[in-house]
Length: 157
Image 1 (cartoon, rainbow, N blue to C red):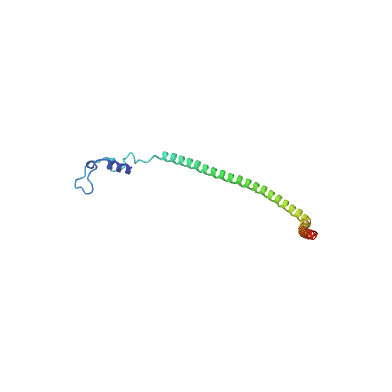
Image 2 (tube, rainbow, N blue to C red):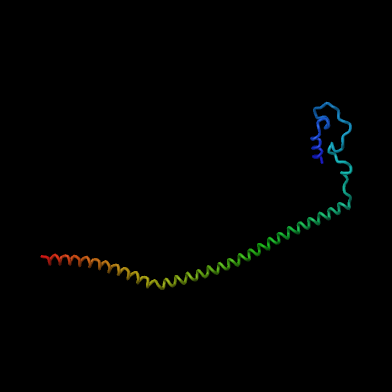
């Protein structure tokens, strides 16, 4: 209310607002009640006792409804978290089962590889022998070419 009165005073021209701190004019004898920012008698009356009781009851009812809503929202949040935790737990169980199956299959593959290892070693030995035999064949071929060249040379003489 005081702010509205101050705005009204600021909007009036200087002569209507009355003297300022530096003015030597006397104060006008009659001021309007709203010029001073003072509440009038009818504005300052307090509500009667039954109105206060009704207002208190209304406030408590609304506060109760508000708090009930807040508690309900919180309960719903907790229920949602509980459901999310349950679903996450189920997902982790599924992932655990998958990991156990992968582990089992890996162990089976390692056992099969271990059982095939002697055969793989034999294959490696055979490959080494084939390589050695191939080298011997190349050397034999080179030697046979030399002999053929010597034979042709002796034949020409």
